[in-house]
Image (cartoon, rainbow, N blue to C red; front, side, top):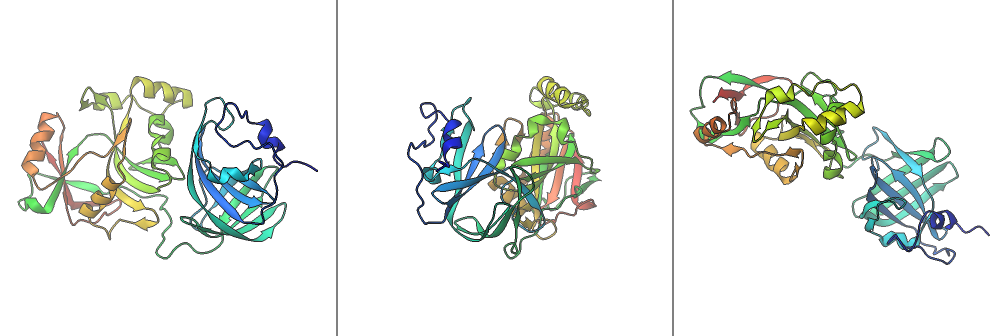
Length: 355
C-alpha cells in the first residue's frame, strides 16, 4: 500500500527543519479538520490543508482564499502533509524546502459536499474563515479556488481604478483653524496603492501602473497581509532628511526588472501614506470623514524601510507651516476634518498652502 507521506519525507531533512516528519504511515482519524498557514517563503502565500484519510491534502494559494465571488484565485496542489502539521508554526531554515516563516492564519473544521480528483467542494467553519468554496483542477497540479456563497453583509469588492482627490491652491491658512487637519506637502509623485493578497499595485494620478518602477515598495504587500486596503500617498526620494524632486526624476520607467532594482539601490524611493480609500471590504470614500480615515490608517501601523504614515496636525496650521519651512518643503495641505474623499475631483475642502 502506498504511503501518502513518501513525497513529503523525501523533500525534508528531519535533522534540519522544525517541521514534523513522522516515520509511521498515516492512519485515518475520521475527522474533518483544516488549517490555513500564512507562509512567508520565497513568495508570500497561504497554505490551505484539509484533513482526509489520515493526511492533510494541501494547496498553496498565492493570494489566499477569495473573499467574494468576483474572482477565482490560483491554487497549486502540493504534497500531502502529516496531521501534526495542523499545529505547526515556525521558521523553516533558509535552504530547506519551503524555507521561511510560517504562522497559523486560521483553523477549524469543514464539511465536504464533493470530493473528486478534479473538484473539491468544502464549507469551512473556522475562527476567521467561513463559507463554501470549490477547488477545481485546471492542469496537472494547478487548480483554482472560488467562493460560492455571498460575502459577508456590507462587503464591497476592492475598487480597481480610482483617481486621487485633488487640492485647490489657497493664499493663506483657513480662519477656522480647529476644523482642519494639516499635512506636509511633499512635492512627490502621487500614487494610489492597492494592497491585496500580500501584493501591492501602484497607480499614478492618471491611472498608469507604476508598480514595476519601484520594487522597494513591493514588500509593503506581505508586510500588511492579510489585511487588504487601498491607500493614497506620494512617492518621494530624500537627500538626507529632505525630499529631493531632482532625485525622484531619475526614477523613470525602467527598461526591465534588473534596471528597476539597480535604480532602487542607487536612488531609493519612499512611499508616504496619508489617506485610506478602502479597507477590508468597506469603502471609506464619501461616507467616512477625513479624521476618521486618518484614525483607521494610523491603526494599520504602516512603517517599513520604504513606507510610512507621516503625522498630521488637527488644528495648528501655523505650526505645520513653520515645520514645512524648516524642512524645506513647498508647503502644507489643509484638509477639513469632516471632508469626504472625492475621487478625481478638485475641492476647496482640501487646500494647498505655500510655505
